[in-house]
Image (cartoon, rainbow, N blue to C red; front, side, top):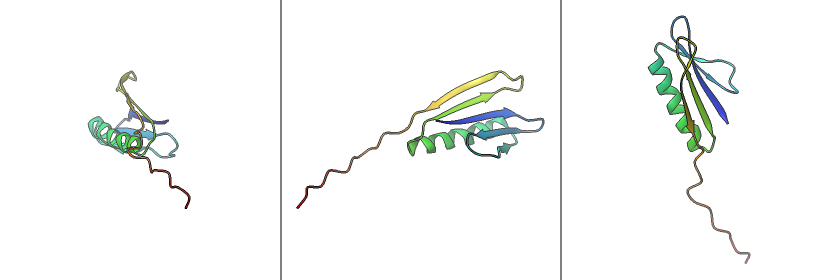
Amino acid sequence: MRLLTIKPLPVGWSLGISGVANALVFRSGAEAEAAARRLGARLAADGVAVKLVIHLRDGSVGGRFLFPPALPSTVAPLRRAA
């Protein structure tokens, strides 16, 4: 499961991504949240479970969202040996 974490900075907001060394920085929390939701949806579409945690300026958790991995839409049929 990938963890996406939005946290306030002295100026702006950061989006941390588990497994990635550097966080992304945004001017507003709304921009950070929109980017995190897009990333979460994209990873889920690729079969990766994602948890998004948003922290408020006072340090409390403002929201938690789960993006369950998408199931394969089609399964290739087995081929019969000739």
